[in-house]
Image (cartoon, rainbow, N blue to C red; front, side, top):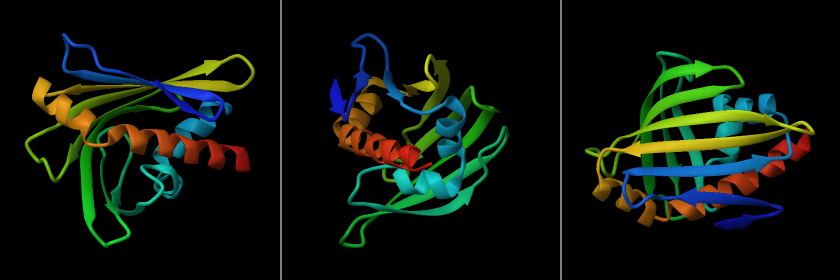
Length: 162
């Protein structure tokens, strides 16, 4: 578990399944957290580690849509990600694929579930089914935890703005 401000980011990697489950609560209503996942400008502001900038090249987050974005580090190195959006239910669910172009044979099927909590808060549960145990372990060892932790810290900051 990683502590992020007043909230913990729980990252669960079962030994018997090729999945990664991330659970995080936010002090904002579901509608705001959901919007931060589908609005390309908001998503680019919080997604990933603080030391990277994001360039969105294609963004169509709707059922049947697709996306591609590139993270750029301070030295100008680029890391591209893309996927297909299989289903979007506003303020409830996003189902998509996710691929890092640096490992093009690896793909995960991601399910992001948004749950309303008392007090106008939200719980996000993101479950990634990876195509192999090796792919899952590579995903987890790639520094993913830093990007998730720092990304959610940035999302907390954005949610507090409005």
